[in-house]
Length: 510
Image (cartoon, rainbow, N blue to C red; front, side, top):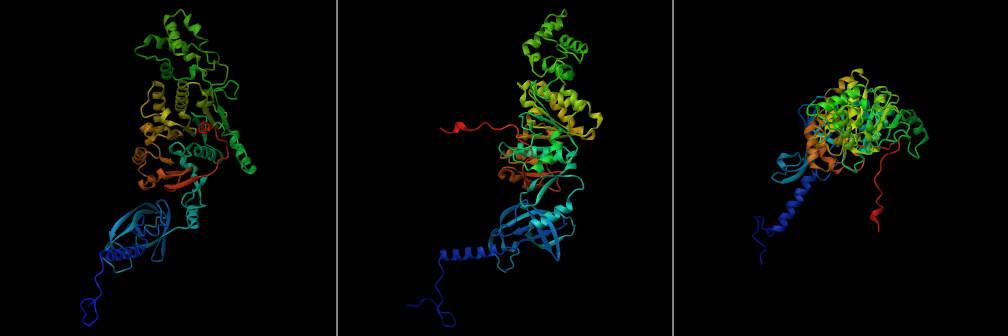
């Protein structure tokens, strides 16, 4: 039998290929074409660029650094976004004449970091070596102190450091439980203590930073020696009469609005009691107990004072452990006339949430009242969603939130800088969050929280924020005035001991 019609030369034509064979040929051609996609970039302004790359060789990574080479000139850049796309061969530079085939490739955008302002087209793109990255950061290093916090996540072995001067802007730090946020914040505070002279006041709700003045076991002796002067400047105020610094207040130290709030007195509807409280405080002596006890109130000839005593007795306010009664130095005295450089207010040592709220409010209100001194101070608010929440649920917290918002809006011109930390960014007061120019973002799985951060920190490329869902322990996105550009880092090791710890999971075994 004949194999088929003959061609003009008399040779028989091969039988037609089957559908499966044609599909296989197409796939083979597409694979070859996809592998032939060249890593090329184009920039119209010399500041931002778009690029294509092969999906078969994904050496380029979001957040990673690249070298762009064109016409004998090289630029240093960073990839900000990358995505897979299916394109026609006519839309790609493949170095081949094949057309009409749909191929898959990577495309994305980036920023030119050395700002040559020279446009380019079809520049070859390749990952920058760690040496090239380190050299660029050496050129970009500020003249002020640099706080070494670890290394760049996508440039192995290249040190990462924060510009100490960048903390003259408010900073927001967030990360879900297990991200390493508390450990990393402790590292940042250590570096600030060692490399700057900035005064620090820490509202510590979980006793996480009470050991900032103590070196970890096994620390290199040279490292410990360098940290010793910083450690000596740390004082911890805790709810313990035997402590070196008992966490105590005098009732007269508390601002008028907070005094009324803790007693549930409204200055309008409870006019008589409010007047009695004001008169009682005005007659007090700061060197003696303001109110010796409930019996003194209840035995008063003034019926309004007796009513005040009944109110205080019912609420248990005067039984709180925070009242010094003139027996020890008040926390407010330390805030007004500091004897240490770093003040850790151990809110976690207090017995009740109401006492924690009042102490936090008193710290913020005292710093604000003395703002005219213009003495630079970093105020660290850990678990900020409790101290300055988006919707305060009690009057004392509302007052604290108001002071935090004032500091966020106007504190910088008086030298008061905020560093707020939380697991729940959406629950922090909008004024506090929106005034932050620095971001330290660790692992966050909540898309709602990430979207909120994208809207608030619009200067951070959205493509970089997306990776927060995949961060490992101690990995973070840093952005703002304390780093040359948004990038990923891996935090290093601390020198001081950690404070609070999780409860052991011994219950998980039979």
